[in-house]
Length: 230
View 1 (cartoon, rainbow, N blue to C red):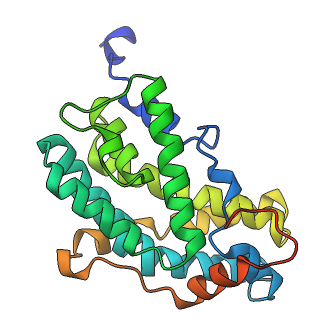
View 2: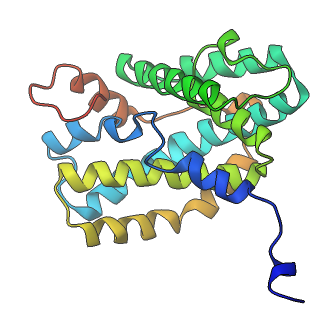
């Protein structure tokens, strides 16, 4: 097989990289999801405690809420199941337990919707403005448009989530860049387990249970000095 023959025309991987890049103009780097208050309150003081904080979020929210909803939204977008899309979008919003987390979901969704519209990215039969704005729906519409595999999309989402919050921690704790990379390695080592949990999550089990994150997010609303919007 020649080198050229081994290179196909499938650009879906590159589009996934683009979708999860920190340079995607949806403001992902401006949110800490309560981590800023956790640092202020000395709940998170070093790399180890930050990894513990993020692991709790991974297994008690991302694996049981975001990933299962991505699974179902992706299928619903492909099937043009507008009722299911609306239901899942509402569920996602209602599962965000604080004012800041709900605002973040809406703001990131609106920004992604605007970007996809400018790029002329759409899924047949699905009009983003018909649903409560949320990032996961925009991700799924882009993935269907670009033929990104569902599992690849979920892995990409996990990496994007982890990278944004680890980089927030690097600034807030603060940590060195090397500690940030170690945290990303340690956190991503747990992604396989998170994906398995998501696969086993039935409809009635979808939800988030992160009391510490909710408390931190609520208190962040009145935090005197803030770098992040959540």
